[in-house]
Length: 272
Image (cartoon, rainbow, N blue to C red; front, side, top):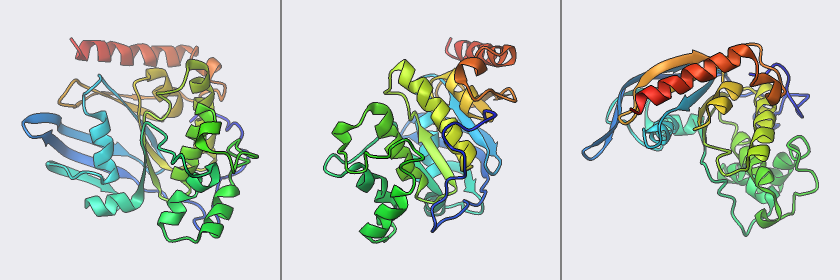
């Protein structure tokens, strides 16, 4: 992760959850198909506890399917996906919080009630859930917008609410599917710095799907480059360390540039 957390001087922790325990992710011999369409072929990956893995690959190669398999939203055709000691889809779902590409905020709820949804789904009373989620609003740059509707929030603020909702679930593994894809370039860069700070302050085991190689190398400890469908791991890169907290400084570092060019070369080669 980048060397310094931005906006997050202390560890983010909800009183009910405390520090999320480290949970490693292990994927072995994974194969998955939709009918006759093979999407994943004999894929192996490991993520250490509190590690951050980026997944990049051609469009339609199976990245989002892989993320859903990790999160327990689907069962593999063959092979194993294990989160800690959780092997079944139900066990993986209990350990993993999934954040889809769209923020999926409910338009009839306020920002605070959207953020508290993960707690409400666990049976926490509305007032208690609001209090717990509300404790993080200032740290997430959302203070003063607790009662705002999603339509009153900027794209970046909506993504912060969505990530807050994901984080307060207390689950030790986060599956993030293109969380900033819908944002403009400037807001996306700002959100990358913000997320780097959030993860540095409150480490979780993270699987991040993105089409942006720079984003993957900036936010993640390692990056797996996937082939065209069916997805296989064709290269694995360790992100340059240490990375500057300032994204603009990080992406021009010679080691960062070399890693980006290697990943781009592998992607271009894999789509021919």
